[in-house]
Image 1 (spheres, one colour):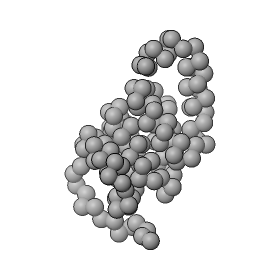
Image 2: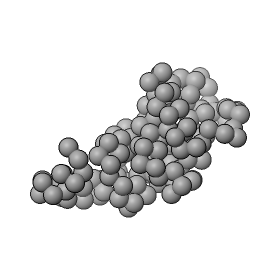
Image 3: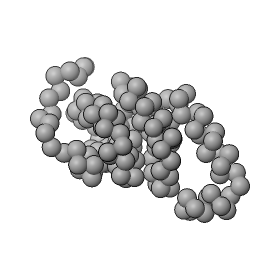
Image 4: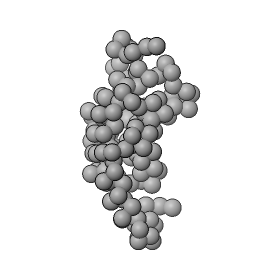
Length: 134
């Protein structure tokens, strides 16, 4: 399905989208990642939704798993929203450096694509000194 098909072919789409927008501030990290991933797959670029998703995700970085980080970064990069959210990218860079050592290969590949596609692959040396280790 395409976004235009959903908008015009399914009357419930606008109601569902409004409900999602209202729920974003209350979502747990996995929910934020899933909403972002799904919206990106549909090509949904409504800035109000993405502003709230990136704001909430940035506020919850401590609780984001490497899979959550991968989905969020992939989604923002997929929609070419890199320049719109520089603070999000800086926050995600710091979180990814901490999470990379425990990430699964599928998450690492999504993160590599997301950061490369976003042009965020230069200028950092991978210093993880601020990360908590177990």
